[in-house]
Image (cartoon, rainbow, N blue to C red; front, side, top):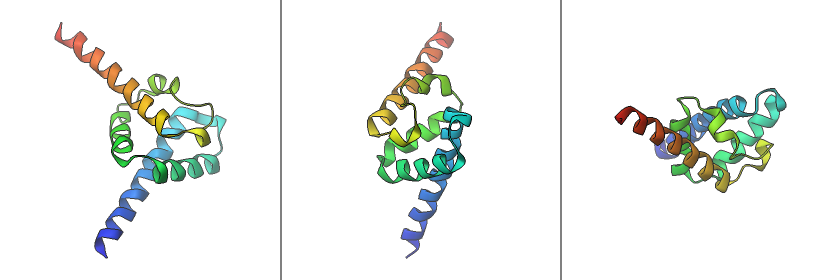
Length: 102
């Protein structure tokens, strides 16, 4: 069905985005294979809404904000980490906006 195809494509797109994010966050500390495996795992396990919000929010590139919310290896990332990372990014963004409003 075309619906299943769409979700498969979305899943694939999210895996690629997640892979890029993990590479930003973990850099050369992990092999491409590890990052690829982790991105697949995260996308499969994660709450789609949180994941989507995180991937969108990350596009502005703030790895330092999320890094302290993440475990030392991408294999260990779970839903709580994703929630915390999203919260950290949104908090940072909110303070930037408040600065602008002054």
